[in-house]
Image (cartoon, rainbow, N blue to C red; front, top):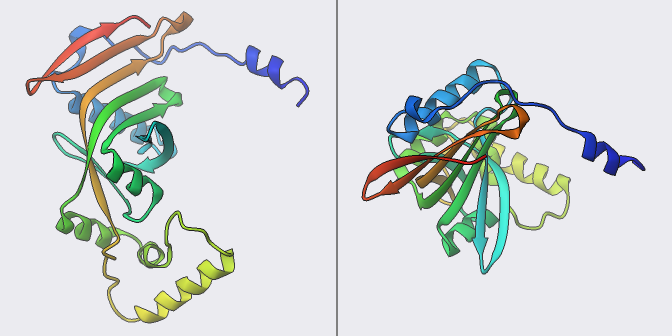
Length: 215
């Protein structure tokens, strides 16, 4: 530990996984997002669908890791407890930021997004695909509230297991999905000597404009 400052200073590597050229990217950033996510899944990268969701309310930023559960032609979906801290922050300010990082591919994606609750039917349909224990766990967890002990949580889990024994577990009204609608993307491909490729997409009058940035 005494050499952590020196270790951090000297901890470095070069980036040489691939390249990203403006003339090669698709017109729609969602097409590139899907390709990169598919690449990460095929490489069996752990939690390939994970991303950092950053919020800000009253000039106080916050961030956490959540999981992509669907991608449409214009939005990304994730699911959570509507009583959670992130849900409260999104209610206070629906504008957020997204960061995806795949170090094994030297790739990063940044987005600026507007966040909206999903239709109840979409939340119902997704909830049905969750493992039963995860479904019951959603009922047992008052997410982000203070918890007296692990034992308290486990007791609540047992209560709901008994309550729903022999029947389908319904989706709680306090649990569901959000859609993230981006207005800005930045695709970052690491390159040697820190001369990275950075391509951005900006939504202007319902069209995507692209440009390259200095690294």
